[in-house]
Amino acid sequence: MLEHGRKGLRARGVVGVIAAQGCALEILPKIDVPGEDDAETTGNIRRRLVHMLAVALDLKIDAGQITALDWQRETLLEILIRLFSEKLVDAVRQGMPRRYVEYEDDLPTLRGRLNVTRQFTALAVEPSWLACRFDALTPDIALNRIMKAAVSRLSRIARTTDNQRRLRELAFAYADIADVPVAALRWDEVTLDRTNARWRELLNLARLLLGERFQTTSAGGSDGFSLLFEMNTLFEEYVARMLRRALVDTNLRVVSQGGRLYCLETDRRGLFQTRPDILIKRDDAVVQVIDTKWKRIAARIDDPKQGVSQADVYQMMAYGRLYRCDRLTLLYPHHRALPGAPGIQMSHRITDHEGRLETATVDIIDSSGFTARLAQICNSASVVEPVSH
Image 1 (cartoon, rainbow, N blue to C red):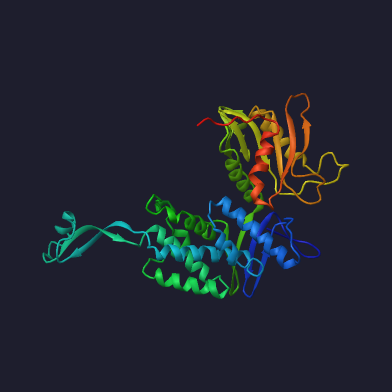
Image 2 (cartoon, helix red, strand yellow; image 1 turned 90 degrees about the vertical axis):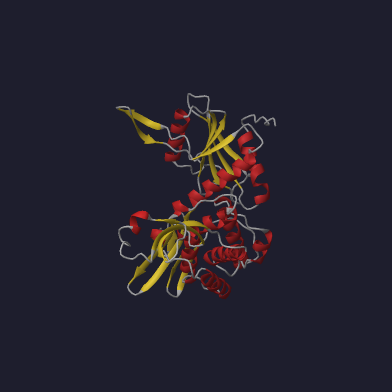
C-alpha cells in the first residue's frame, strides 16, 4: 500500500485513512480542485471523493447533509462515520426491522405447536412441561446484528465528539441485539424487500466499513486500523454507473466487468480470461470497449504516446480482437496541464485494421456535466439512436 522513499511515504494507487494510537494518516487523490488555501483545497477533494463513493455504492446523500459536513476539518473516515451514524439514527427512530423467527422452548403451557419427539423423549419424565415450537417477532436478526457490529467497531475509532455521541445513542438502542464477531456475520441471511428497502444504503455503508476494504492490524500493545480504497477500482465503478445514466434513453447499454472471453483455448478449456472494465453494447454487438485508468495522461505535445503504457495498448488490442470491436478507448481523469478540453485527446488508427484506439479524459470536478461529457465521448464516433417508448 505504501512505498518508503528517501523523503517520505508514497501511496501506491490507494486513498483512505491509516491510523495508529494517537496519530492518523489520510491519503487523498490528486484532483485539480479550486481552493484559496490548502484547507479549502483539501476539503473540496474530500467532497469529490465522497461523491464518487456515493455513486459507486449507490448511496443517496441529500444536499442538507453535504452542506452540514465539515469538509475542511474532518477526515474522510470521520465524514463516513458521520454519514453512517446520522442515517442509522434516522432509520432507528422509524423502527428497527423485525421478522418472525422460529424458537424451541420448554414452557408450562402450549405455545405454537408441540415438538412431539422431544416431548416423549427428553420430557417424558416431566409432564408439567411442554416442548413447544413457535414463531416470534424479534429484532435480533442478521441485518440488525450487522448494524450493531458496525456501531461497535466505529465506537472504538471515532474521534469527533458528535460522532461519539451518536454512536453511544445507537449502542444503547442495539443493546438487546446479539453481539456477533465481524467474521461470523451472516450477510447472506439479509433479505431486502419493499418493507425494509430504506436500509439498503445503510447496508452498503456497513459493508464498506466492515468488509474486506477495512483492515484491522495490531503490533505489540497498540491497535491500528485502515480504511483504504483502490482508486483504479473506484474510478471504474464511478464511470460505469455514470455512463448508465448518460445512456439511459438510448439503444446502448453498459456492461461493467463483463465479456469474460478467454484469450486461449486448450483441451476444451479456456485460459487467460478477460474482463474489460466497460463494454458498450448495441443489442448483442460490442460497439466500444472502455478501459479506465486512474493516472495522469502526459501533457507533452512532443510525446505521441502521451505516457500510455505499452501493456495497456497490448491489452486493448486483445480486447478489440476477442470482442470484434473497432473502437477502443482508454479513459483517464482530466487535469489542468492538458492543453485541450476534456474529451477525445488522441485517436490512432490500428495498424492493418479499420479500428481505432483513442485516449480520452473526463473532468471529475464538476459533477453537473459529467454524464453529458461521458455521452459525448461515446457519441463522437458512433450514432446513438433514441429508444422509442
